[in-house]
Image 1: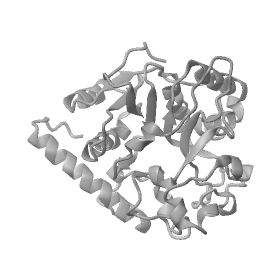
Image 2: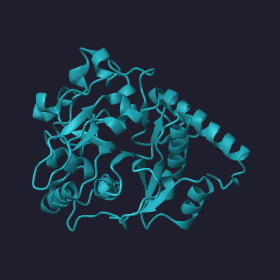
Image 3: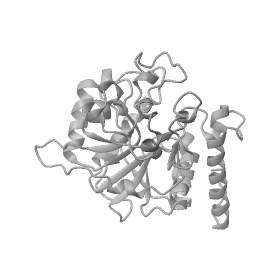
Amino acid sequence: MSDGTRAVPSDKVWTTLITNLSYLPGLLTLHYSLLRVRSAYPLVALYTDSFPASGLAALRARRIPHQRIRAILPATSKPYPDDPRFLECWTKLAPFSLTQYSRVVQLDSDMLVLRNMDELFSVPLMDREPGKTSKKVFAAGHACVCNPLGKPHYPADWTPANCAFTSQHSDPELAQTSGGDPEELSPRLVYCNGGLQVVRPSGETWREIQDYMSERAGELDFADQSVLSGCFRGRWVALPYVYNALKTMRWEGVHGAIWRDEEVRNVHFILTPKPWEDDGGNLAREEDKEPHRWWREIDAERRKIEKEEGVVDDGW
């Protein structure tokens, strides 16, 4: 996937994938949000050949480490006419191949870190031994399968009754610190969200992923998430929602029973509009206006500091 070199001296890194300019505002503010909470670990932007030179210039201007990787696309794949973005999501599996790092925590570029979460670099994951299957290969949060927008192309069993977060409504305090053990949940509740992945890169794990993709790519409805949930069933650590707090969980009638603004460490701005597309809150759903305000305030901080540090205004 890469030439084996490190973009930074540290062997433990945050990474985020960038393939086009549409997510660049999110990446820049994600990077600043990690600095703002004084993370001890650097963010490395993993970019593909589709990312233009102007975007690389913006990263360099802000001294954001970046590393070229090859795009991942199985030989056969679903066309995803309703969600063409999934065609780029395969590349979010790249951290598993970056064996020059001992630990990688992958973040989507439409995330905003509100509180330090460096403890993710210490989540226990079993070492890989040649010829042996690791019990816990990675850590991630559950996917919310409530389908609150009623998207018709989503699986029919994606309903609130089958959502792992619904099973936590009876104990909201525990939900702040535990994602539950996937092995103890009904199989229909166990599906991970690939927006945040805590990974111990391994050549053996990467080969396992590649084999799974080549055998099943045509039937994987959610690209990378389907790979992680299917290939490693029963072999991942479920993190509490606070590390990958999907903004839809905050909506009325979804998972407000467990959502606590003061506990959230990392907001994930799934779906559209993104906060940087929101026209000051005018395009957002009512439930999204407050989280979008958080993003805009931190983005404004970033821009102010960049100006003070002499970063030329390049529109980003």
